[in-house]
Image (cartoon, rainbow, N blue to C red):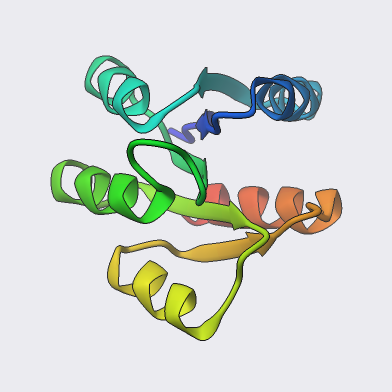
Length: 122
């Protein structure tokens, strides 16, 4: 059974809502969380096929969140969105179990292609 449930994590609530509307218009079920702790609570309650997280968030950044998520849910596919792509970040993301990094501003076509292909493989 394919799991089209996607957890979106970003402290920018406008970005969260726009992205969730876009994904839902394409047939996905989007759940939003405004920080890492809220994301961990939602992961404990519901099953998700994918986590899409921003990198730069107060309290717990996307790398720290991904490390915690992968400890408990090793099969979840994680995409990180950031404007701060550098070689150090790419290495840290790979070590945290992040499968894909997408740069801001987001290329919607690339994001949708990434989501569809990763969920199809699961």
